[in-house]
Length: 133
Image (cartoon, rainbow, N blue to C red):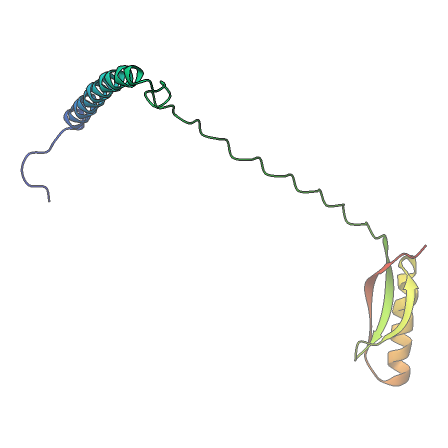
């Protein structure tokens, strides 16, 4: 639990702003003092015959980061056309027969006939195959 006086946010904000203002003033007076010294040094250099190049330090501009090269766009994947067919499988998932999508009844009859003849399990499932042109 907090002991003592609880400080209000407004008071803390005022203290922070006052501290920032003091820092700005210190920087401003320090930079003015440096400028005055630099001017005096510049005058002394001119008298000695040296140029003003060293007297006033030139701030280098920051270079922009080079732009990233654009990556080449990938070609879209080739669309493979497919069609659905009905396939008759046995118990070990071996393909026994294949029928067009519209002939589901024939595929079911074939699976039923095989299961009665051979006493094994046969089933029909849809399968999507690629269309080759």
